[in-house]
Each structure stands twice: as C-alpha cells, then as structure tokens.
Length: 327
Image (cartoon, rainbow, N blue to C red; front, side):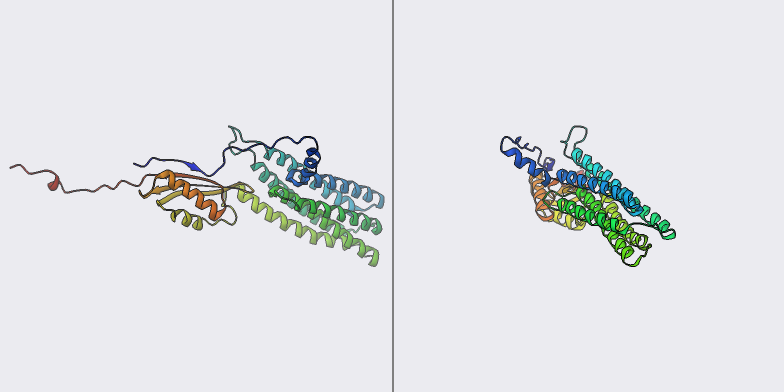
C-alpha cells in the first residue's frame, strides 16, 4: 500500500536580515520609505500637515468648506493611523496560537478604512444638501490658496504610496484616502474659481456631490474586495476549474476532492486538496509534483496536498465457485 503523506509548498523558515551598522544605517533609514509601513507613515504626516492648514484657512476665511475638508482629512488621518498600526501588527512572526501570523490584520484595516470612506461620502452629500439650501459666504481667495497647497501635498503623498515595491491592500486603502483628499482639493479649487469669477455660491455643494459619488464608488469596490478575502473567497484571478484541471493532469492522480483556495492576505494565497492516487506513482512524488505544477501554472506558493491510496476493488464470486460440493 502506498503511504499517505502531506506535502506543503510553503517555506517553513525565514532568515532574518542582519541589523544595519555604521554607514548602512543611513541607507536603511532611507529605505524605510520603500516599505509599506514607511509609505503609510509618510502619508500620515503629510495628511496631518494639510489638515492643520485647512483648519487655519477655514477659521481665517470663515469657510465651512475648508473646515469640512479638514474634518474629512481628520477621518483619513485616523484611517491612515489604523493602517499603520495594522501594518506593524502584520509583520509579527507567526506563533502557536496564530499559525498564519497576523497578516490578516492588513485586510481588516483595509475593510475598516473602506467603510470609513463610504461613511465620509454620505456625510459629504448631507453637508452638500444643507449648503445648497443656505449657501455660506466664504472668501474664495483663501479657499483657492489652501486648496492648491492641499492638492500639491496630497499628490506628493499619493506618489509616495504608489511608488516602490511591496504593495498590499493596506497601502491601496491608504492611497484611496489620499486620492480622495486630492479630489477634495480639486473640487475646492473649482468651487473657489466659480465663486471668485461668477459669484455662484452653490458651486461648492454641487461639486461636493460629484466628489461624494466618486468616493463612494471607490469605497464600494474596496469593501467588496476585502470582504471577499475575509469570507475566504477564491482569490481574484484564480478559476477553480482551471486549478482542478492542473491537478488532474498530474501523473499519478486518479481523482481529487476537498479542493479549497483562499487568500490570507495580499500575495499570500493558499490551496489545499486531497488527491486519490491511481497506483502508478508514489504518494510523496505525486504530492510534490502537484505543488510544483500549481506553483508554476497559477503562481501559488502555499500548497498542501493530501495523497490518498487508490480505492480497493472488491470482486464477488458466486458461492458455487468458491465452495466445492460434497461428493
């Protein structure tokens, strides 16, 4: 009988990089911004600075638009802070209590961020309706100056978040928040131009509604994507029928069952399957071949295969052929 075996495509151990010393410390510090955590921290600092500028500009110019934009940035700053904490938690090594580590914290933070983004869009619509009814008197020059500065800072933060390597759902959620702030700055600029050029006070609430629709659409897509991960859905781009055909085409595989594919976090997809051997190859060899084929064809590194022996065929003979009659 062929022995059962479990073969996983995951690398068990990881070497820790040496601590930077001497002249390498400067390069190490410079490289912190190349990591997801460093990019989120940099974007958080820029968002807080822009928020303070919007608060000062709103108080000086008596602009409710700038104060509302500052409130929007405060929500985004809180979301970025949450993402930063989750990113730090996600890098912790796995333990006996959490064998996958804390990588799912990235997805949880992105999910919460998306919900906050959707709630912000609803708040913008409510605020826009109130402003349409009673348009406030604002200083368009202050709005334009602060909006231009905010746009420049937000574009810088977006460039930092989108550059480099090592992107995940968390950095994408942070990027969505920064881009929503940039869109808010553009909307404020348009409203300021309309107020300064034509004296149309309702330009601000009208532009805000358009902005709210854009924010809500981005939040909806992010919620759908992260909810799929939290619900153990099939990773995006992976088709189970194709995965099944890859496994069935492996020499030595007679059948399969209990095929599962899900995503732990960005870049960490998992596949588990029970394969029934056909008796032509050893179970360990078949499991290793399945792991290699899934890795090469579908790009999934973490594959666990449980080989099972071929079914025992039982044949029944008539009793007259087995028992010799007495003479």
